[in-house]
Length: 409
Image 1 (cartoon, helix red, strand yellow):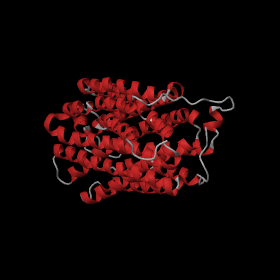
Image 2 (cartoon, rainbow, N blue to C red):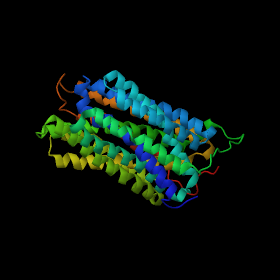
Image 3 (spheres, rainbow, N blue to C red):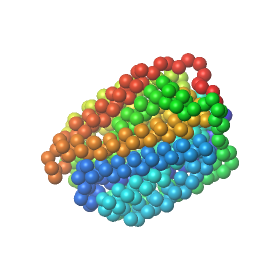
């Protein structure tokens, strides 16, 4: 067991940062792509939906497999596949159909690098420090997303979306190299399952695990749709203030990247805070605030930029801040031999909900705005995300505070 941000965790976090460099390249380019690829709001949302469904299926299979062949092996194989699919997306995504298929394949290859990293961190760090360690891991993904948006802001005005896609596609290659360095001496760990343990009892009939899974489902509903549509929303806000289309798209990407920086700070600070105050207290506070932001921010599109950015920053902080807390709490609620299975169920349902949410958001946007016009009304679409936030808040409220040590193997 380890206690600090050692070189192993630092390299693993950097690997995840570069792996996720391609995750938001589509969202950052969305304002440009809707015109270039002739997409409605529903069609544009469906590409994000395809990505999330691909990621959900990958998480389901890879998490289940990690319980049987080790998280380390699955992580490294998935990293190699991520390099291939990222390059294919950068070179050949030039229409709605090709973008949908190739971006879904990018997600499908990446699932094995997420929950497997959580499992390896859970094996390495004791519960008293695990929230902080997982906070750093989740924060590394936020850093990758922020860098993705920054790169888009720099490259879109210079080479359009093809250049943006190509630059961010280099991320998974660097992630593979760093992951190999971090894990080259890490053992392949497979936890033994005793004859008295069964998946149904360990996960499905475990009240705390079920509440955490429900909380994660609606956390994902709110968060993933927010990330998919926030750059376009910010571009619309800047356009309403008089910016041209190109400058608004680049500006939206830059501002959205700052929101991911807020998420980065939220991840490692809230993970550490939950080590001290308890998982339930932190989850409840974050879920309640993010829900309020979801119901408010869409109606502020035409207000001064300072107001939009301030509310958006709080939304970003609170919507992502509960992610490491939810993950840490699940590692404590489920025995290690069934952690991969629990993460598989949680991830499939969570990212499945996150896959549907951008599509619902786009459909609500189409319904509440005149056909063919740039969206001016965003409040109802963000309100659909707030409904998920309400359920996540109720799930956190219903959890009982934990006293004593987490469940042992």
